[in-house]
Amino acid sequence: MDEFTTDPLFNGEITIRQGRFGYRFSIDAILLAAHIEPRCGDRIVDIGTGCGIIPLVLAFRNPDVTIYGVEVQEELARLALFNISKNHMEGRIEIILKDVRALTVDSIKEPADLMVSNPPYWRLDSGRKNPNQQRAIARHEIKATLDDIVNAARRLLKVSGRLVMIYPAERMTDLIYRMRSSGIEPKWVRMVHPHRDSPAKLMLVEGVKGAGSDVKIEPPLCIYKNDGSYTDEVEKMYNPD
Image (cartoon, rainbow, N blue to C red):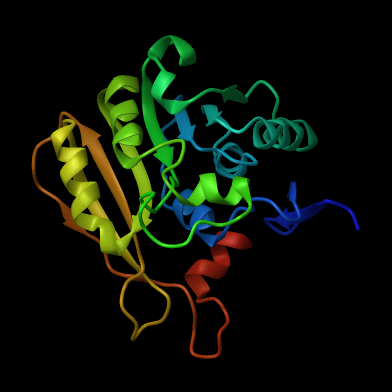
């Protein structure tokens, strides 16, 4: 059996190679990418880029941006480079193999306009760690904590630069507190529900460095219909018209 799979996105206009048994991108990355709104000429940093899924989606949708994907795991960084080449996006996306704690403005040449992250969700002392090391690092704070991510945003973003993240709803207080403590003010929040009548499991948040303290709460996002298929909004994130 091949140790890799090749998965299509956007009706096959992008293909993503990823390990069959290691860490694989989930719907969380698709939800996050769909809520990022780059401006023309933006310099974007994706922390924990994995196989490069978020940079690939952003570059596909936004031809006039420059994207740096930061990954600490060498095997995943190699996959990201393969996917960039396979999708002919060399020169638009650069992969940086580096621990987020060592990341500086010099690593990306100048301050960023936008930083995004689908980070590890769980503290080391919380829940069962996956026996697969790639998946464990992606889901538990083994190589990067929430503080590490937010502190990187404080270092890398220019004033008025934006940080967009997806995170567990149950850790809302942790995320909002750490963003504000780092001078990144939450400006909009959207809760993500598996079904219309179920509690929120995830949250999408955008913060702005050096902004004022008003926040907009967006309408909730529901992932599934009653029959288990994606809602129309989510389906369009995978296969836009």
